[in-house]
Length: 207
Image (cartoon, rainbow, N blue to C red):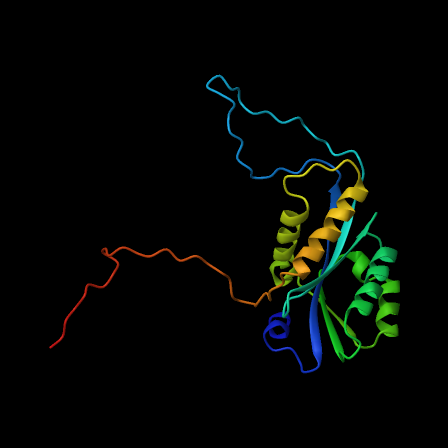
């Protein structure tokens, strides 16, 4: 069903992918910047161990694959109360003219609590679509999390959780200005040109 929602959603509906990222700790996150040695006697680069005991939290996210639009909120914990609060924020984020909202998510217990069911009753346009176990690939917010981590965390050191919250807000705003859709079943791949060899067909001239 999830694949069909991505490829042929019902008219007047939107499909959004929901998930949490974390816990994210206030610590140093490695990057990929090349460090040039100071000279011929330069020693091997060393990095101090950072256990990240300076605060932590979760990033809740909503991603709309058809357009690439994303919405994030940060919370101190992954609880049912925070999840319902986030669902309310997503409800306000989605255009009021949308008739049906299909929310793809995993089977985490906080996603199916009593308060979540009450939210569904209070918002009849919502329908929760739970992905099967061990099928995280069906939730297209997963590859977007990698982009967010790269934009917000990679190569930076954070001294407190509020600094991560600000970094996530800035990264989400940047993505909003550079969105592109995530199409199910299609990936951008770089194809290198093949040289003629045994596996290639020779040029044949017919008369």
